Image 1 (cartoon, helix red, strand yellow):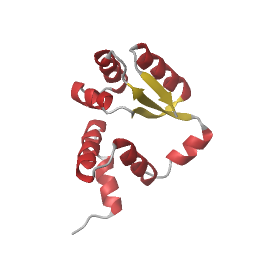
Image 2 (cartoon, helix red, strand yellow):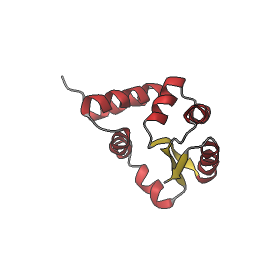
Image 3 (tube, rainbow, N blue to C red):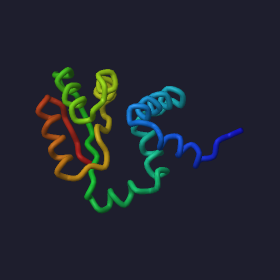
Length: 126
């Protein structure tokens, strides 16, 4: 018996951010895709909110582009700003380029960019 798309979305909605992060990693391995592609596919399915936000430029994605020479410092800052555990933050940093946070206000996005860049990484706001 196959699950409907609605049942799958309901199941995902009940998960924590950490559980969703682990699910994305499992999907990457099973289907041979990157997190960027998985997020792009999942974004519109969650109600189509991503497209209008991008047009209005009131919400931004903070993308870790390059780690730089201070990987440990970058991991510490990513843990601080995301609330991820050590392993999850390390995986995110090592998987750069990756989104650190998505759909944040301009002020918060700029603050996150400053914090992460202060640790030696390169960050882009989209």
